[in-house]
Length: 323
Image 1 (cartoon, rainbow, N blue to C red):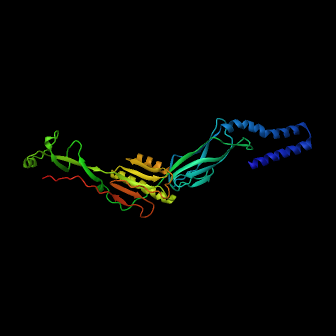
Image 2 (image 1 turned 90 degrees about the horizontal axis):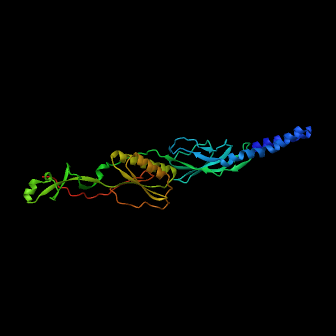
Image 3 (image 1 turned 90 degrees about the vertical axis):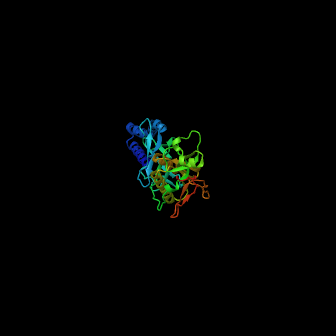
């Protein structure tokens, strides 16, 4: 803008010298035309300047470390005049803040939601001499997803999951049975005839099936950007490992909004839960995640001893072998 004012003032000075030296109508018209030109340009630019809307152009999600150049889009029904603004980028999970310009790279080296807002937005007339503050700006956000961080030395999870036994729906074959007295409605092929003959009462073999307990992945959303990369990376890896093992589970994370709980049954619900957690503010410094009852819990932390397995041993229903 300063450069354009210098050029304009130089043109005015030239017209003044030309009028002082020539003293004819043509020099006077040239001087008046140069003096009135900024006002005419402003009047022609005002409709486009008032109608203009700015919106940050960001993708919905990126992977950590993926390069992306930030830009903003100009919306106007008329030819868009020149625009200048700063793009303020805020990472929700850590509170970090950057002031960028169009063409700069987004800070995607760490995971978390990046909220991009436009500040000090100015729209200039077509000459670039006058400006107005842009009132209509649209913020945007992008979720930077973490990379998986493998968890080492995991135990065999399936053997912990038969927390209790229940009668098998519909009956059928089962390796484990429970012996009980006959009840009206029981099928005759379930009767244990030898044992019934010994006891003098009808005894049936009821098929039993394991009932899997609650599986939790616990985490406290707090720490530096590098620590959160490790936490979210292990949370993502562990959740996918449980899905591959055939264990639906829950993500239970303490955030600045309270305890967030998400049920994970497949990859789509996992990524939806991760995107929601990456957009949460950090938990308070002294806040702690309350313990709950579950068959298996895995605590996600940020250090080398960050995780430990807690298994609630549940007494199984008595199962009697067949004789």
